[in-house]
Length: 148
Image (cartoon, rainbow, N blue to C red; front, side, top):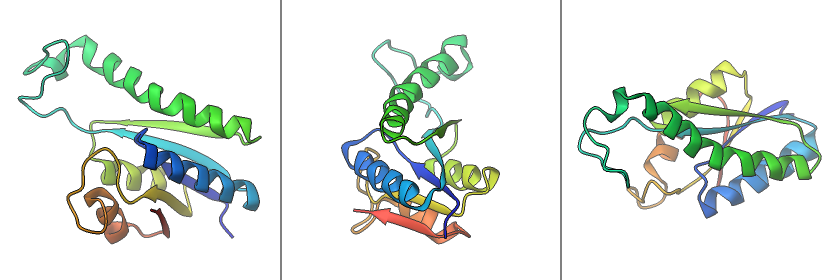
């Protein structure tokens, strides 16, 4: 049925449920798995604990900080998959909005299913679905399984 499944995660508790369901499905189907997390573009006026702001995205630390944050999400996800006997590929997409990064990665990896959750840590901006999930559903040319 599905041969390559893309599982999107942002590291939230709900996304972990989506990861578990996606891995369970992949194991049952013998499908290949890619796990993706997306670091959205840095907005002018955003500050972090270090006090970075304008110009931060042009600094050498920017990419390293974003990669470190992504690996803090991807490493546990990969460990969960490995514990279940699955080999997975992890993907970090830098400076794209979640929906764009997920759809682009699904296309690049020739995925035939996207698994994601309805809300993540991005906040609830829609009544029933998160805005990025709604956008993936609206734009994806492949099936999307939404976990609630």
